[in-house]
Structures are given as structure tokens and as C-alpha cells.
Image 1 (cartoon, helix red, strand yellow):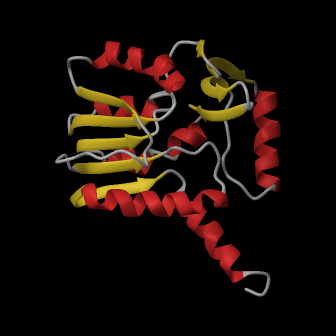
Image 2: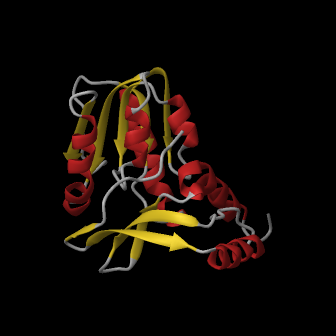
Length: 206
């Protein structure tokens, strides 16, 4: 089970953590629009948390059911040494650290403001019960040296957009060298991105 975020509201630089409420009216309107557009990323009425970029009005992450479902496969497979690229609200980190099968979680996050908002609360919650390492570094620059991972997960994108396909491919190839045999390795929304890429390659005559 992936729990909802417990990160407190706050701001650092251009990033901000905000609590928000989805009413039944808002939920019905959003879900109907999703249905008409052929999507299934619905949201239920309730209290949620989101991480935004105030400067660009960009939503980096929320803990709505649709977003949490995106991580279920990774959470189910998580064990041993876990590597996560992208800190977000830390919900996936928390879920992994709560599993008895997980020994170590390493997180790479390039944005120092996100680290300032989220990391201290995670360390307060889990240290020294579990090993948690949070690095301020790009997923494309990280080198684990001798460390190998049973579970690798990439979630560094704000949107599901085919323009990010080259980065998906690059990360899957790059980190494949550091995955243990039989381990789990994937990206957020990768199957949707691959489907979009196949449709693009088919063209209008496909």
C-alpha cells in the first residue's frame, strides 16, 4: 500500500508543497472530461497534497489515487537495494521504507528546493530504522560505483509526454548495468509513452 503524503506545507525557492481539497463537483467534472478525452486518470473527492513549481505553474506531483496507482508495480516489486530517480513528495520512498523486504533506498534528486522541502521530514520519520540516502544530483550523472540494485525506478518528469521518450530510453539503458539479475527496472508511465511512440511511428496511414 502506498500511503498519501504526510509532508507539511511549505515553500523553498520556486517550489511549494500545498494541501488541497477536491470536492465532489470538481471530481465529477474532472472525471467526465477525462472520459471524453479517452483517459482514465480519475480523481476522488478528498484531501490531497501537491508539489508545484510556482514560477512555471507546473504540477510536479500529487498524491491523488491516479498518481499513486502509477507506482503500484514498482512498490509491489520493491526489495533489497532500491534506487529512485526523482524525490517528488516522497510517497514512493516512504512506501518502500515501510516494506520489510527493503534494506536500502537511494534517491537522486536534482532540485535542491524539493530536497529542502521533503528530505528533512523523511529522515526524521525513518532514521535510523532504515537506510535512506538522498543525493542532490541528476539521474543522468549518478554513478553508484560498486552498489547494485534489486529495484530501480525513474520518475523525473512532470507530464506524460512523448517528447520525453529519448530520456526514458537513455535511463533504461544506462541503469540496466546497475540492476541485479532478476531485479525490477522501469520508469513512471513508460508503457503509455511506448504506446504513444508506436502510434507516432505508425503515422496517419497506420
